[in-house]
Image 1 (spheres, rainbow, N blue to C red):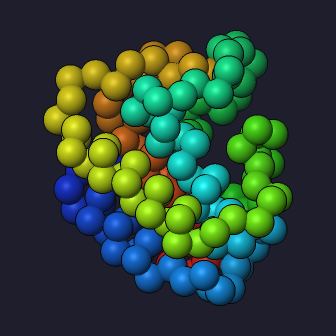
Image 2 (image 1 turned 90 degrees about the horizontal axis):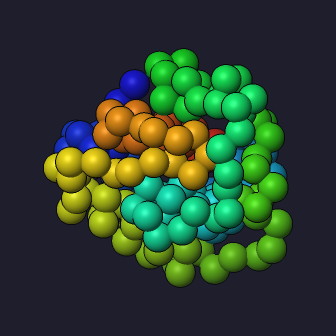
Image 3 (image 1 turned 90 degrees about the vertical axis):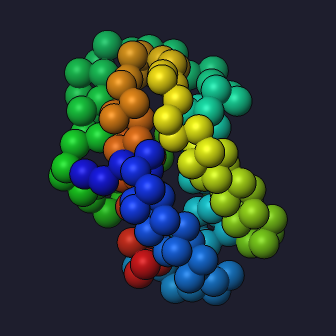
Length: 147
């Protein structure tokens, strides 16, 4: 799995986001491009330490899902979304894309950081795990819109 902390993967994600349009057709799921852009901000904010969204460690979640967050196997379509990350309200595409790009840029500017800290739900993650998890999530949603 590629990592958002690697320059080539970072640049690829940024290029793919730049191809997303307000009315891009989704291949699956219910979110619009603007809602997807807002949804993708949540895990980035967690990595950056801006928010923890009141998530708490759960041994069952860790046992069942932690490794799938950053392994090489792509996520299947229509996976359930954490309730507080679901997007059902209308969103402004230019605003949400700008916010998403800003968060990704902040990660890129700090890609050599020694440690990103613990994840509020998954606990200790290495930098490699953080980078792969973020790449995998963004890749999943960009593929949702054919990118």
